[in-house]
Image: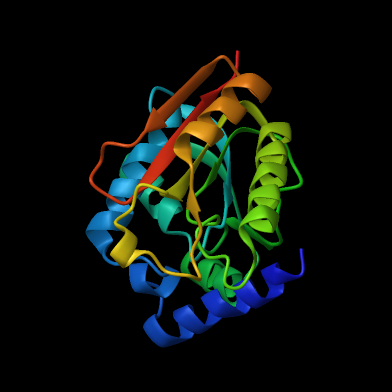
Length: 202
């Protein structure tokens, strides 16, 4: 998708302006970043050891969160921003990071945090098609399940931005439920203008 190059540059510029911080990956605060991670790792919270693909890994903050929880994780971080991957590798020597859109391997779980929010000038229909293709990729590269988050269409209209995409949670819940797994959880109750979807495969 041609827009992804522009989006990669967008995030590289955020990193250059704000460094390896929540604002460097376009989040408002450390508190909101932690709240997002808490929802995503519900997918694998019962597991002592697992493998995980982190799509849109940024500078590797989710890896730090997992380590802080004491998780033993075979981790791979992937991001379309070369600058993000360079920073992630520098901050986490010995860990695996790669530039790209997909992991290229099957892991127990995959997560995608924030990658569906910034669409810049891409139209709604084109961006939704991109999201659905990416969900297919997450499913194909996940043995046990995957999780992702999106900004919600139920955001306050006066706060919504033209360069961001606000997804319909009911539509994506139905898509995941009918296409990927019987066990799908929609989390839309944690105080942010977004939702998280957990897809647990049999």
